[in-house]
Length: 63
Image (cartoon, rainbow, N blue to C red; front, side):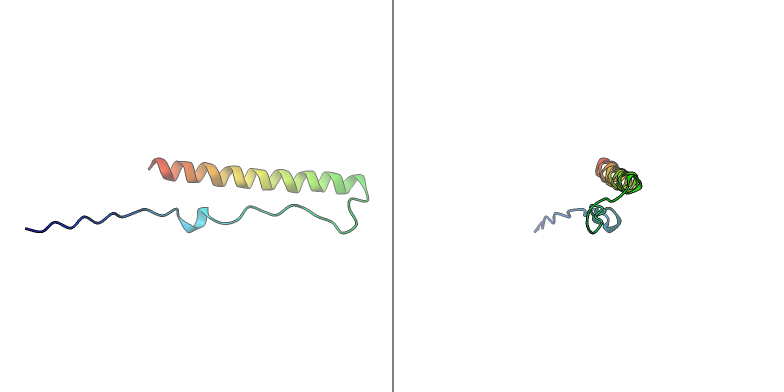
């Protein structure tokens, strides 16, 4: 009798591997107070997206 052991490594789902949003940039830098507000909103949304992505990966890893 011959027994062959095969290790199957699960992969992280492709939907959880998408890159995080890039940094907000405006040519010439912020010109108005509104630009600072928009930058904060965009950066905050990007951080929320990445945090949700990491939480989903952790939940997937737990099974």
